[in-house]
Image (tube, rainbow, N blue to C red):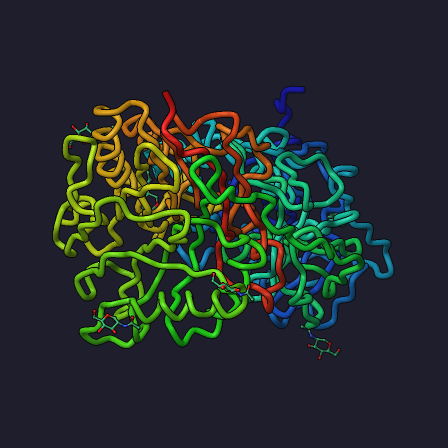
Length: 609
Ligand SMILES: *[C@@H]1O[C@H](CO)[C@@H](O)[C@H](O)[C@H]1NC(C)=O
Ligand SMILES: *[C@@H]1O[C@H](CO)[C@@H](O)[C@H](O)[C@H]1NC(C)=O
Ligand SMILES: *[C@@H]1O[C@H](CO)[C@@H](O)[C@H](O)[C@H]1NC(C)=O
Ligand SMILES: *[C@@H]1O[C@H](CO)[C@@H](O)[C@H](O)[C@H]1NC(C)=O
Ligand SMILES: *[C@@H]1O[C@H](CO)[C@@H](O)[C@H](O)[C@H]1NC(C)=O
Ligand SMILES: *[C@@H]1O[C@H](CO)[C@@H](O)[C@H](O)[C@H]1NC(C)=O
């Protein structure tokens, strides 16, 4: 009907200042930012659903029908809720604010400076919404409409949610889903813990809604274009109790009821009380099933980032025990993060022969297996990591099966070359140590070996690319999120890959194994650059490992794979095998030895026709 009558005009004009009542749905709007941000609102009416140390949450008594607009909102005030009880229906005036503590976070819409808090009734029923039952199910792969279909699409940081402020699509985009429930009291039924709690005791979980990427241990693994937005982190309990510190991947907990709240850069559930573990996942990581034949027809190859290992490291005996009992003493091991002989003491020491011989002695003492080792010492403090630690990559090998082919160790500044043969100029030798690709970071070490009985040598490249420091969270404002230091890893992929391509250019049937901590996922640009330039193949693909079981690391919500083996086409055969050993990703904090899982592979490296 057209508002043409003067009486109606008059009525509206008079009522406006008295009752500019807005609903909570109108405050939240259907986007990330409130359409009323910065404005004063009066007579906001809602049911108190929960109280916290710095405010309380109210749910609309006049909800709209839209799944895009949250019906609840946070009222920020440490005093205004003093006399309120959960179940009260109240009205209040206040100011709509958008809050974040850091400019890479998503904003929280809240009502600040509440006044005229008036109790209308008490003792009303407060019923949490069951996620996936009373709400849509959380979307399982896409995060926001600004990610180009993949949070790992490149270039990064082309848009900010707070600038574009897209209309929410909670059926399709995970962050839109959680934003559409901002401030809402919800229940997660049959939760599963996905990872160990972070240093604040917060634990990522899923409920019994549909998920993708579930691995056999009960966690969720990151896969191509799918980093699991259906997960949520359970933050600090509202009643001052604590969440357990010992949860780990695959543990079950009691149902969790709490408030959905953007905090510290993530959508959290702030539980009403500390979560309680009900069933522990007691499955322990099985040891490697791969057995060396003791000659070129079947060698075993390990790969392990042993996390800042020094001769006096408390975890050194545990690493030795894992090498013996879990990796089953592979014929050759690619090691990363070997520190020098006095660890992170910042002095001129760069040699790691004491670190490596101490580890070898610890292995020998429990297994009678002898390892020899090779590495190339870096120039002091030129390779990143803890100052003075001089971390580098190194090889352990069993001399009864494997020996260095025509040894000719390079100095830290000697650039390895592929000579006619193919033959490495330096064995072992660092790849392009003067390249800007490696400034202030670890250089890869190429080596050439002969396995017992083999007609021709095989090549290895052990590497540790730059880590993702300085990135932004999957749940941050910046879209697609910043994948920290990605351009450097693309360059590193190019330099390492070009070196390997020279070997294959001479001998397309050369046996080449490249392994280490790539600090990147196979489906992201640096790894795609690496396989295309080097001509190597991802060993997970070669052996057809299910994508959910491809992980060696935990970060935020996801089991994920930073450590890889890539092999030349001649090793992509039916005899080749590969296993990731989840001794650290499945463990409680107390039992973690390194932040990475090791892997072991099996190859025939006898010369093929
Ligand atoms: C406040 O809003 C409610 C509806 O939510 C209405 O019934 C009430 O009259 C309003 N009060 C004032 C003082 O405007
Ligand atoms: C709570 O109630 C007490 C006692 O009636 C009163 O003195 C106080 O001002 C009230 N506080 C708030 C925030 O309304
Ligand atoms: C995104 O926000 C950050 C932090 O405020 C700013 O530096 C950057 O320029 C913004 N980018 C875009 C594309 O708006
Ligand atoms: C390490 O190397 C230095 C120099 O070659 C040698 O003097 C020393 O004995 C070695 N130490 C160990 C533990 O192998
Ligand atoms: C350890 O190895 C040595 C040499 O390989 C061998 O002589 C000895 O019997 C072994 N000892 C044990 C306990 O296996
Ligand atoms: C690799 O580096 C070379 C030499 O700088 C450059 O020409 C080439 O474009 C790079 N390739 C890729 C895929 O980045």
